[in-house]
Image (cartoon, rainbow, N blue to C red; front, side, top):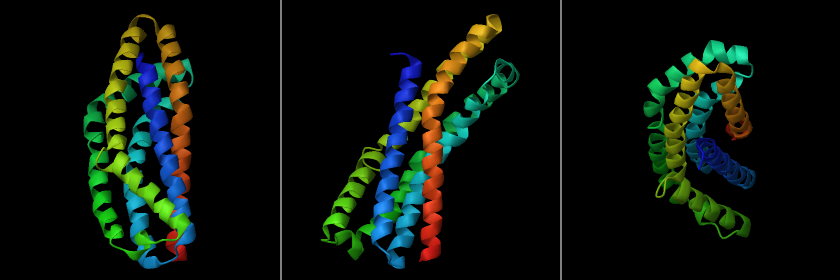
Length: 206
């Protein structure tokens, strides 16, 4: 399997999880107005959301090199900076997951999570499954980000080597890869922005 396909699959999966979390948050925030519950719930969502910020902050700058001129001028510095810091960056999602889980346990003891109202009961089951699979026990979100961040240097090294001998081909490979990655990075960025705005509105409302 090509390195571009592996990275794209991880980005698609990460994008999907953010869409799922956003949908859950919309439902719960729309149905529950109790500040004592919504405040810690919003904190859980925000803590998990920080993992997506790590992806955006580290990968989105690469998508800005849309011309061969900008690629030749800025790629080496971007690639070097990434390779120097990515191992530190991939430790963050697990830290955020641990923090989110501590806050999630507080929610579990609250009466809202034990509701028998069908819509909320279904949504909390969905939320529990999301936390279990993607955040805590299976930790697929952190593992996906880990795999993505560790695979990317292989692509960057390939482009770096080719750039020295055939800059035109290096840019073609780079642009082809990051044009695809950008589709999912843009979705992640937009969903993250909307989720942040939603949390702010909820904070003001309560």
